[in-house]
Length: 330
Ligand code: SAM
Image (cartoon, rainbow, N blue to C red):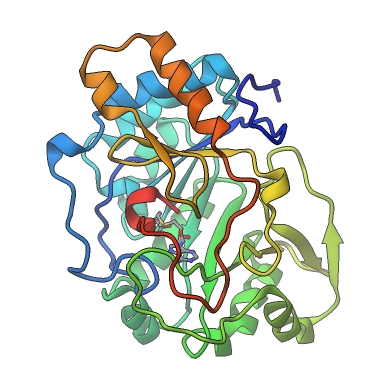
């Protein structure tokens, strides 16, 4: 991985940009995008693909080497596969990945693969169709599961399955979900619920990493695995004899801010230096007012210089971040 010129006040090199290309989603997950509560951005309020690509190219010239496309649901945006192809071809960009709920994946797997996407994260919080409907507001469990199977058949690797651990909702299923790692080469990643934005969940005793680990330990011995250069913040484990892995993302109980290397570009063109802090720099207005690439680079550096040393969000407090996950991009 190249050194990045985007260095914050705490000497962290920022080389990873997460990009939300839409705030729209075909699901309405209770922890993310409470139905009808969040007004949608208009066509003019979101970055055009060519604007996103220009911003990313400037980021790459400063040392961004890894980009993840997210949303909302990235696969609902028209023209996404052509955009991904152009993105993958940006010189100097070493790693491009995508986070999706998988519901549109089966029918579009070929397009995704020919765009050059080789690895993917798919969200799946339950193995129960009724519960999936309760969590996401849509009866799309079968489509999402078929999407996971299609990704596996197409040879994408690794396939990471994102599971937000929710007390009273899927806590009774964590074992069954973890068990998938024995039969599939998937990386099952349990994510602590983050109380941000407009909330429907008012959980005073959230499921945190130690509880998650305790619940799944009954399946066997969990051996820790060392992190690799492109690993995210997940603490990685593997059950003896399993094909896949287990990851625990403890954003709340044991934050990983000291090693955070991320910036985030929202669908509306805000460059955020932290998921869990509302500070941002606007890129959309300068872009549409004809700014130069040097101006854009300065905005990157300014956003980085405001990156907080650590976030201030705690498990059992009301949301301290106003931005919603669906527009920031999880
Ligand atoms: N639509 C895509 C999907 O479902 O994967 C991408 C966007 S979604 C916002 C990205 C990830 O953020 C998902 O894995 C989702 O589970 C996670 N997420 C959303 N809201 C969250 C919250 N409040 N706490 C923890 N994770 C959350």
